[in-house]
Length: 245
Length: 245
DNA sequence: TAAATTTGTTAGATAACTCTAACATTGTAA
DNA sequence: TTACAATGTTAGAGTTATCTAACAAATTTA
Image (cartoon, rainbow over all chains, first blue to last red; front, side):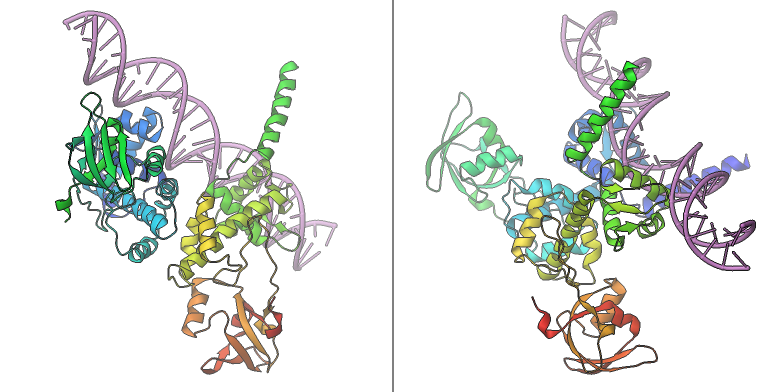
């Protein structure tokens, strides 16, 4: 009876410790946090199968890791329910994403890499534990707010600004917009954009829109006519001239 | 009988694969390789106890990892004998050290870090698998041959030049030398040197030498008299004016 | 709504890296 | 040269992160 009671008190004590003391997440855990963050829908929910798929692990693996993350207070999870990040988990995820995006920006602006080359390197650098290293990058770049693909860089507190760009696919014929960000930063898509000389900041004019397949003809720079499929238009995020902050 | 024979053939096949195909060494294995490389004496030998001590693991742990490294052809080892790196193991170790030292130099020359701050960061960055990342660093720095502590940077083939500096402790009274490298790059020692304004490239004059405790009085720059203990003198590597390559 | 499909869980195993305890070998010193 | 000390090895176990096989729940579809 007494023993049970002691165990109970100890378990409270350690639960307290785990939420208060920073037990560094392993690289694996960091990857799960990032995946959960990126997969979160409007309700902040993620299904185990999506998580497993994203990380290319089996469902039992994802399931058991989610249980671990819950023990350290980084997510909430109930059997057969979707996973939710806690505020602590969200913050930790955002800070990893901060390191990722700062690194990508540094590689492009300070080291001469192409925007299609940086993801794989940043994927490794983001796990480095050296606050000063990332602070120096940030400083050297003049505190950028977006990465080379237009995605916002979370601040030191893990807060992310919501840029709320529009999809190019929503633009009307005749409209002029600025290419501001991408909804897909895969190497393939970036190389597609490279081959068309489409860079962030480019002013685009929607020449026409094809009702049949939602493809668009646009013009920009020296390019008079370029046809973009619906699929491409949905991946291009744009802002209107007025909408600078 | 037939089964045994098949097993034997398979084992030969996999041994062959392991020596031919690049099975990436894990971060842990990389740390063992580096430690073996750094601890190697003139005969290239390392005792298990030294290795275990260097990596702060138990002897059984070091012992079993050495067996793994042997399986992948990175070291040679016989029961109760010291460990030896193979040429393949030496090369792999040197290439990790190359990444470490390039990183240290980059952090100091391109990112404004102090030489006492860079070791811990480089210790993490050295495990990044991204040849282009390190090649760009190298290029941006103009292909440096030494790191911020004067240690040589191995080339892309893993070859290390032997700079053969002398110990300051061997210098005679009256002699003038240039501080070229350090035999100890611990934070404590680097901070000691910082506090005395002793940097690589500084011209030192040996004012006098104390026979009793082997301490030295030196002068350099604006400093007329500075007493250095024997311990410090042994950690300072110097070259004479003539000995530039 | 019952059956089929999808999604999620449990159980049990494996690989990598680590440990301690116990034992074996080698080297050193009485 | 025997005994002690130092060094090295084996055995067995724990942790983390992964898997497959089998089962269970939830959801979709007929």
